[in-house]
Length: 295
Image (cartoon, rainbow, N blue to C red; front, side):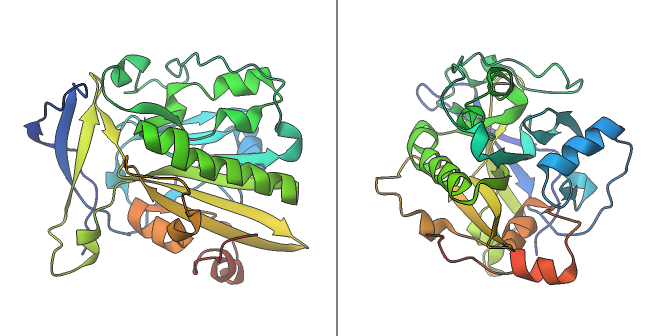
């Protein structure tokens, strides 16, 4: 049975060539108990959530995921883990009009000034062997310089291996924008997963997951990343979700269809509830089953 996240336990310090400052931790695996989120957002923040987070802000399902803070921006809303120094989730509402190349990509990564607790800085990624992986892609805000610049806050980053970030994951981001063009708009949730398949098998589960920590601020390296995409197609809502391992072994073509997963699976393995305002019928429609690959 999965158990809840707790604070990481020191296990061993690794020396992996250029990937210095890496440490291996273990943590108990996720269990799916429910925890109600407290209110307390301002009216402006509630409006941003209503605009950007499809059917409501994702909820934590267990408070042992640790403390967190929110960042509210015009292009995205996210919940940042003070324990892992990466976002639990980033939600965005991408419209066809947002896409383009008018904005000039700056690559000016910077700490998020809206976070007051533990957080990452660009220095955490130096000599780690990991890219600063956007959760809201910069290209999703290609027409607005201010909104694109805001995607470079470190709260929107998580460690991704270069071949994954620049190739396989990028292909999913590009495909998502293709669907935005096709359907005129899409709502997207993106974030990390800490997952070990042995925990799904009672014969091999031991209740823990090993994770790497990088940098002086202790940034957790996800084992996988998820992306949930929701569109309206001829008046009907539909969703498709992907879970991709954060590994370096991808080769083109990437066959993204093999990474399709249900939203229910993502919820079970992240400790989050997505789209909490859905009706019971909508939950069955959008969350319970894997979608076939969209054309």
